Image 1 (cartoon, rainbow, N blue to C red):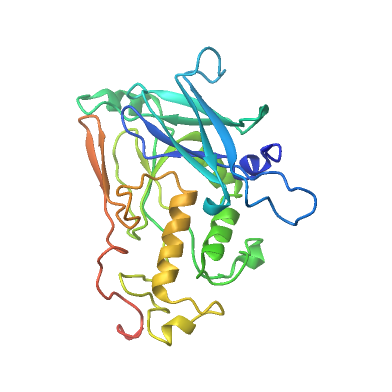
Image 2 (cartoon, rainbow, N blue to C red):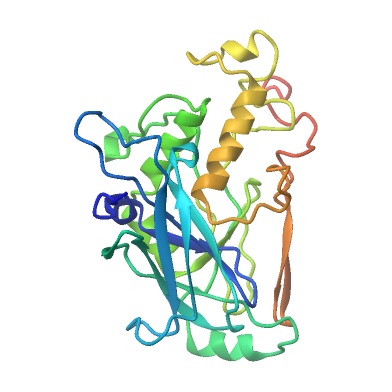
Length: 304
């Protein structure tokens, strides 16, 4: 299956995330060629994508990690692999290619591993000589579920208020065509979570960035500001989706489109996890929103 000259990988580029001291997740999207008779890609055939990881920007020599992975329509043709056997506190360059056409390649991405947990003060030296971000730690809402009011500045989102798997995939697809977001993903690993707290952690060599994934406005374990599993809540949008289905759709699309580790194979909601950045910082990514949060601010209960 030949990729569309890796057009989707150029459109959505590449991304990396959840770095450890010896591994990091790599992401891209690879949509197959249309067959000329149908409006969309062939949904029945999986796509094979190869990847290679190098220690230099020239991509020369033997890759330090390489492999192949399959993707399909079932996961929106997204690809997520773990590059392993890497050296701690090291920058790497990587790209994806079509298994059947190696000349069809993605843009080159840049990522890095975290320092070994036993490292001490190396991060201070890096901070003194390097003002660019090494890692993006994302604590905010990666997408918004509403249509918003960005049309006047050329930022009109597609579709409707998000409720189904198609809706969430479409919105993530559109966001990931933004040139600034592409650049940020392509040039550093991200550590993300879907909680909505936003802050800056002044840790050396770690840039904490909060951008606009969540299910919907003020979501909690059993609902949001405008949807829950009552008959009224299920009718909040033309899709008629109830909250449980909406939540599962949002979480599934998030795992497809984000370079984030699935902590428990049988539970996509378990997103909390830990990262050791040398001896400088133990970073714990918490979920204070989706897994077990009780009723929160849904406007009617706060008088707003």
